[in-house]
Length: 341
Image (tube, rainbow, N blue to C red; front, side, top):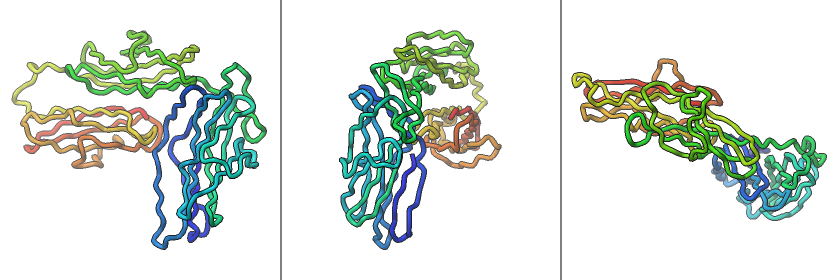
């Protein structure tokens, strides 16, 4: 969504983009995926007025309905009034409305909603968001939602998200986590897992989060398939390397640290991941230093970093990242993983 805020001393509107977006589903519940979190703006040193328009859209229990929420808007000059253009045609359908409004659209589709807020001194700001109305009675969808009262066809494909991380039990055990997957119709999903990416789903109708023991060391591309109640399905994959876990195979003369690295979803949006090296350990019993090469260029940009931190990747893609750990005696080890964003 595009968000505007006004500082009168600056002489106009400034604009910034919020990462991610809002998807509205008209059903018993609304699921939002990919929002980048809140942004806080404070008055400048001169105390000049600032007004912020903040719009979000949610589902409604009414057919073709939408909950339009501008309650996050504010001004340093006092309470704001709320005007809403519900279909992006340039006409504000609701003037001086409530901070949260319910709107019934004429037919299914995606609509551009514009919020305009005005403070007691006449300063104003706008924000936009997309709302998708679903006809639960099976009616047809509309046009392009650009102001003619119609909307885009509704894409009901579910969203599949898979993360794999360490689990107790040994080095071959992993948690297969599909909890970030969701159905656009608001219903339940079934979860199937192809452990080795060969097209055969070894686990069918599994749990959305489960612990699995991989049969032997190696690199596995595990595929998740989710299916909603209408038969719509989607897939996602995650590549994980399983290391040998036989303590008797360790050569006591080898003092290199054990290096373990994983990445999983983090709050903040689609491009944020938690980088987790806390399962690494030093065979000498000493403390470790953690260095990270985040773009596979051979340079460890992060030196002396934390064992666990959140990283913002620049955009969608596959990223190979490297971890190097070093103990106090100078013994070191490295490993890498591929992070899908």
